[in-house]
Image (tube, rainbow over all chains, first blue to last red; front, side, top):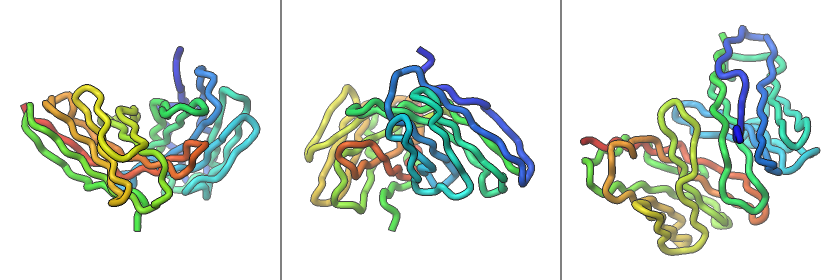
Length: 112
Length: 112
């Protein structure tokens, strides 16, 4: 099992460019999450998907969109990147009724 | 007021000592509580969960929960240099679904 995988690992964008961060899990988990982590701010929830076919906003959804493509995949899209979106992005997943959120390795994004 | 608060540290302890990490939360309806460890440049990993008042022990780690005072703590006995990391407190206010709110983390440094 690869667990939770994320691509790319690093990305540099210019202001206004768009990109999609990919996340996939092979653990048959129901719920998936996207977080951003900034110095001094901790992990903040951007969007989540409780189950295949549903998505909901988290704490900081502005400037992002998500797609739960199937049970395995949950992508995060930046339509028009801004310097304020420079951050480390983590995807996570969990099985219904379990304690643990399993995190991917993260994507380090810089917006110039 | 931030929902989950932690002292950012760093908390410095010598090898073999007890490290005590604290976390307070604002929502009295919080249901479950988690401690994640995050090494520099890596993703968070779950080390302890606690649901009821009192202590829960797992090896060198003890989580303590006091819902009346709205705090949760993590004790690390016989601290090792490999315990040096940032410890994230997370709180779930929902019963049937995991939607975590994270603190900003406490950086622990264990010196040999």
